[in-house]
Length: 191
Image (cartoon, rainbow, N blue to C red; front, side):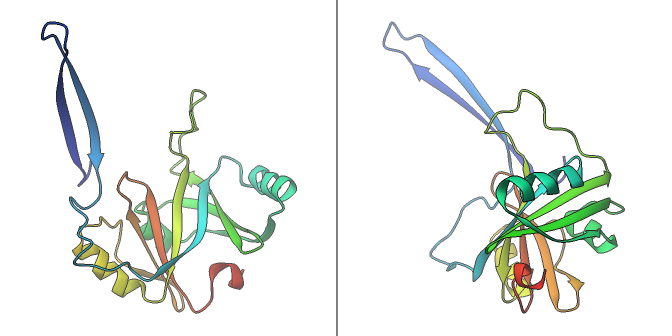
């Protein structure tokens, strides 16, 4: 289970019909800081950049988003050892496609190793699907230190993925993966 903590909540509801009660419980993982202290820290300096999706068949997904939603394929590439470090899966093998639509970006990942699980047929809207949300920063290493001091759990230290491009992944409060990315240009401008 890693470093995450589990919280078990038990509750008792006293009913007005003679004192009967109902027990309930809620078990969930806690990935984020215990308490957000907004008085000690101002918002970090980031902007929304892109969304990434893990897919079963990269070409099929490229066709789908380009044909139906007007995205344009900017490039495809193979992941590297550095990506394995960033995402917390050393040795992973992945093909990546970068798509853009206006000022919006979509990043598609087809993992070969490890092979991800398919989305179950009984999946509902509340289930997880996207693999990370990307935020742009002017100084990833500085923002990393600020967030780390607030108890945010990071997958790795910041990594210089390409020359002058710094990337780090971390967990949001429900375990969702988020990315901080630093470069001179927005990701969509360099594709």
